[in-house]
Each structure stands twice: as C-alpha cells, then as structure tokens.
Image 1 (cartoon, helix red, strand yellow):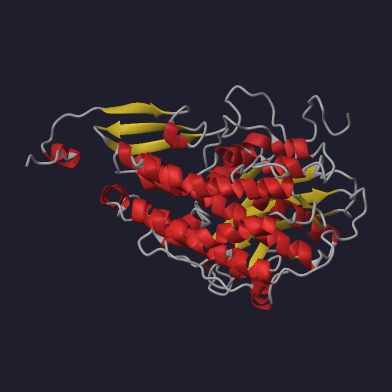
Image 2 (cartoon, rainbow over the protein chains, first blue to last red; image 1 turned 180 degrees about the horizontal axis):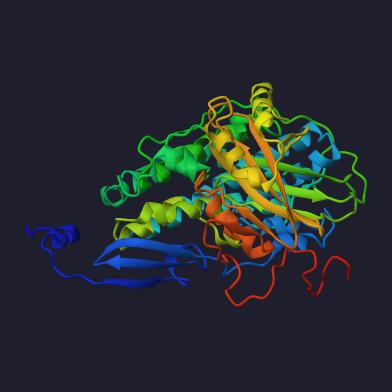
Length: 378
Length: 148
C-alpha cells in the first residue's frame, strides 16, 4: 500500500511552499446557499478562512420598521426558511410579551406540534444534505422522503409548505384540519423506523465516519466564548436547550431528553440531530395526546399598539437560539427590530474550526454546523 | 430582572463605578466604564456571565443605545447591559476580547448603524464595501420607509 501523502511531512522537509488563496463560493453546493469562503492554503492545508456573507441580505430589520406588527410575521418565515414555524413563534411571543397576552391552551399545544414538526423537517434537510456532502447521495433521498410528508402536513395546516406564516399574536391562524390527525398519526408511527434507517444508511457508514469523526473538534469553552448555540453547542457537551432551561410556551409539560455529544466533532454534530428528531417525535406524540379543546386565538385588538418599551425574547430554534429584540414607541409599527440569528453567530466559529484541516474537511465542518443563508444574511 | 445574587454583586461594583446604574430591567453604564464592568460581569464567580447571547444597537435619533444581552451558563441567570453613546461621536470599545462571539455581531452593528467599535478593525459584513450610509439609522432615506 502506498503511503498517504501528508502535507505536514512536506513541511518537515523544509521545502519552500507558497501560500495561496482559493475562493470557495459564493456558488458552491456545499455552502447551503450563496456564501463565500476565502481560503488561505498551504498546499492542501487550510491556514485561514474568511467567511463572506451578505449575498442574501434583504434588510428585514429595516423593512419591519415600516410594517405593522402583524405584517412582520411573513418576513420572519424568510429568515430560516427551513424552520419558519420556529421563527414565527419567536416573533409572536416577543410581541405577546410586550402586550401581556395570555395565549389559549389549545393554541400553545398546536404551536408546539407545529414547531416540533418543523424542527424534524429542518433537521432532515440538514442530515440529508450533510450525507450528500460526504459523498452519499442515497441518504439524502431517504431523509427527503420523510421531510416531504412533513411538508404536506404543514401545507394542510397553513396552506404553504415552507413560508407558513401560521402563528399570530395571541395564538395561531387556524385550528388543525381534521385530515391532519390521521396523517400525523401515520407519520409518527413510521418515524422511529425511518430514524433507524438513517442510522443504518448514514451514521453507520464507514466512509462517512472516517470523513467526520475527530474532524473539526469544537471544545465547550470555545463554543461558549463564540456564542455558539443549538445542536452545534450541545454536540460539544454543553447542556443548554432553552426548552428545558427556560421553558416557554408549554414545553415544561412534556417529557423529553436533551441529547449531548461527547467529542464535539463533525460526527457528533450530525448524530445529535438524529437524536433530537427522536425527541421531537416524542414531544409531538405527547402534545397530540394532551391536546385540549378550546379557542386557538386570544382576544387581541385588530390594531396592535404595544406601549413604549423594549423586549428581548429567545426560543430554541432548529439551529440554535432565535432571539427577537423589539423596541416599540407606542405606534402600530415596531421602532426597531433585531433578530438574533443562530446561523449567523454560529458562522463566527467556522474560521476557528477550519484552521489546520484540509479543503475537503472544510466541507464536513461547514455541513455539520448547518447554516441557512436566509437567516445569516437576514 | 437581575437576580438577588447578581444585584448584590452589582451594588458592590456600583460603589466603585459611579456611572453604573442598576435599573428594573437592565444595567446602564457609560462607555468609559464599559470594559471594566463587562470584565467584572464575566469574571466574577457570582455573576459569571460567560455567554454573550445578543449584541445590538438602536438609533434613538439623539443618541445610540448599544444593548448587550448576557447569559450565565453556570448559574442560568440573564442580564441586559445598555450603554448610550452620542450620535455625533458614535464610538464604543469592543468587547471582542471578553466574548469572541461579539466579533460578527459588532461588525453587523457597525455595518447597519455605523457604530464604531474601538480597539478592533471595523468592516462591513452584510452590505458591500461600496455601500453609502448605514441603513438602520433613522435618517437613512429609502423608498417605502416608515413615513411613506
């Protein structure tokens, strides 16, 4: 067997090597949208990474200043477009915090069901695309099979597959349709087997493991220092899930676990998403079992005019902590809106993670962090 | 909002830092004392705010307010720190050395509001280098704005 060529050996030989710059993106299949990385390389080894973002910047925060509180909801869909329900929830809860609205029980349960369905759908995209990036196209086809069923459910609920705009200040837009219940029941029945199937197809694959295990290790101190959140943070072994730590909505009523990683490598970041999906399925089942009767909207004035104040509200999104900072001036439009987008902040640690790895590992590291550019660029 | 232990520590800190005011929902501080206060909040074992969850700013037309939302993973408590800076001299020291997560967020605030963070390189992050102005300022003129 021929020996594997290692760049570090070449450095030991004291050969003269030139550093050179390689542009990766903005159009690159591994960047999950339009995102560019300027790689400084020594041979194949990454010396530095400069992430360049902003290709999808639409100025949502500025647009919100010219919209009424209700009109802002569809814009939140378009941040993390893979997990629109969760963005909706963070926003409407922030406005509800300002108004002091009590949301009806049934609406809270429906919110939880929708959010967890969307979390699974979002993780399925993450897991499937990561499989492609590691050279296994088949895994992608299997995860998208289940994702499509969830998309159908979201369409039943809201009329739209992705840009749902389903949450309202004070509740949800509509009650769950009757055809939703048998469909979700059959989905929940099939999900555990599907997760096992992904484990067999992707997680257990030797090539996949070789490409991801011990690659891009993020230690817990660095993760906390860089304000990393979500599955990426938990893969490093930090137990921080807002659904447990600061329960919002009715999450304190459900029994679920927070999966944690051991090494904080790309493999852990991948594996933790499959484990989280299993827990989300458990939450949906419990929420369906305990779904109370009643209205799905609180009494909220047609024109929402919160008294002058500022609030900051965080929820656990699919990619990490989604936070909404709202300043009201007593008018019907927000004076200032800022969104804490987990993908944007998680991207801050990419350069740190990629240094010293090879170009192919950059794809593994970026894929395991799982950024959505709609959210990064806002 | 500050919990009891944090409030007690803040009272100790306030004795040495005259500009520090502990309000009902947030702590306000002058930019001159910002770094000392932030360092204390992170390093003091009773406070231990090791996680900067959100950093942003608002244009109040006569001044900017930079807002820091801190969380302690050790104790689980939260704190909001506010710092007002004049509009004609929008400078504030960087907290990047205290929390690495401030890097991207400070660049975003610089990009969209034109707040300059001293002690670090300020470069645009979302908009392109040639963009004129800072769109989240209230005097930024655009078609479809708040008043139209």
